Image 1 (cartoon, rainbow, N blue to C red):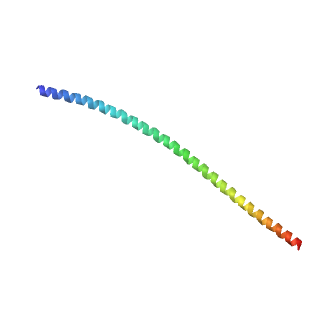
Image 2 (tube, rainbow, N blue to C red):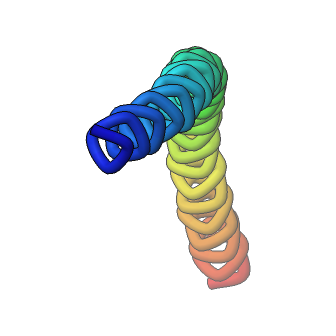
Image 3 (tube, helix red, strand yellow):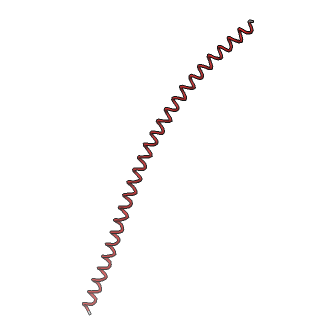
Length: 94
């Protein structure tokens, strides 16, 4: 009978420890879930910021490319005009 009582006391003590461990694990899990939610929110916000930055950069690159084409066209026109003026000066000499 004493052995049975000792076994019951051991099981009761073990049950108490396991209950405490389970409670601790539940708290840690809840904290981990909260951290994961916060991290996901932060990452989502950062991704939106990066996406917006990329869109702005692409827009600026498109605008720069357009302006570069205009400058090249203008330079080509200047070169053509210079050639035309040079031709006129040669023809007026002759």
